[in-house]
Amino acid sequence: MTTHLALLRGINVSGHNMIKMEALKTTLEAIGFQNVLTYIQSGNVFVDTEEESPAKVGFLIKQEIFKVFGHEVPIVVIAKEDLEACFKNNPFLKEKDIDIKKLYVAFISTTLQSTSMNDLKISQFKPDEASIDASRIFIKYAVGAGKTRFDQKYIEKKLNVTATIRNWNTVTQLLKLYEER
View 1 (cartoon, rainbow, N blue to C red):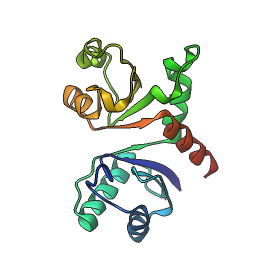
View 2: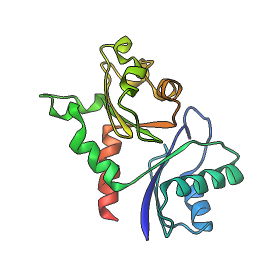
View 3: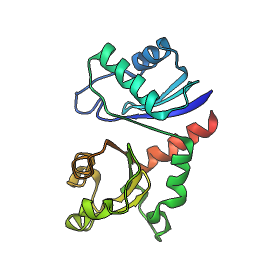
């Protein structure tokens, strides 16, 4: 049995793509996922399954959400190791007196190339900062996520990927939940 964490993008935001987590849990259990656990309303879902492929798990969840709820929802499926790497590799955590509330992680659907940082043109978003690590982009927003144009839509457009962003507190909680499973 493998545990996967599916990060759903763009649900329950400003009244769009509304999905109750209890209904999502029931829906995913009905197609065979076990030990389904959701965390907050923004679409963080743990599932246990015999299926080892994260891409296949994401496809099955996406397909079922469309069938049951009628929403086209991009999904990035990550492993516990991805969350652990966030804590080991986030360069902003090394800064003295870092404000955790300004830290975010963009989880990307594919491993990024070394040239991806150039493609993002992050310098035009100063004083926001970013650093790429495999299939993650660590972000430190100067003011806040709601006041920047360096967001998931921009990242997806520039890199031609699926991305979903979580704040550092959520990343921390998700790792704790993974460890408790």
